[in-house]
Image (cartoon, rainbow, N blue to C red; front, side):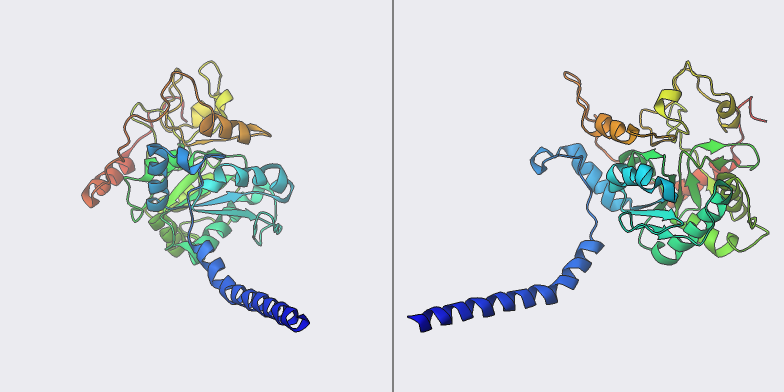
Length: 343
């Protein structure tokens, strides 16, 4: 009897150890597969059985309009802001990178060899664009730069970008006018570069002082000048009613009764004071404290009784042909500011 029990125990031990060994040798390939296959994260708490047609459309866009998001942050904001980005809208990027000057394992920070400080934001973005170009150029279609106090509605960004060719030399954001002839995109509202825009910047502008200044205080203005000098067009991201999609303020500061002395002067297009913001807004700036989670709740959880909240037209916009894309680029390239308050 004891011999039988002993044999049984030995068999169990050998079986367990063989299983452990099998898991051990299979683990690296499983980890590799999980890293290489990104999935669209559903709204927090959404069960698979609750998935709607709009959710399925978001998944399709996630797979077909691939966006790498790189978020500029600093050590004192790692927990205060960057962690909230990671817990909210950052989950919906195809790839999320945080760019800072101090490593942080919890955030997976990309540590840049740049001195911290607002005066070095331009150098920080330059280093970020170089890092991304060298590692991810062919893996994604569009490259979104955001600050750690920017909130981005990724589904709306993908829907907006879907018709456009990532191999066209273009970038989008909230277009400002002074200082750069074709306009440049507000850094706080975030801006998104096509694959070709990222390529051109790194191949022709980054290390060429004829096209790009070696240093500068205004990151968005300097990057805008660099891109203009290498033929990247500043696109128009407004909706059909001329309302802005990339918004350089928080919603509470964008109401018609609010006065925006400096913003009104900087906008490339004449501001609409009665209806400022597109129904398909893409981004907000100056996100504070619990605003990240308030936006998350209002956008992905809150439902109003008696009002059908799903979009009525579930068709994706038509992708532009090469000729249509070239016509768009030509039109945007010829655009002149119509803002009478712009200097």
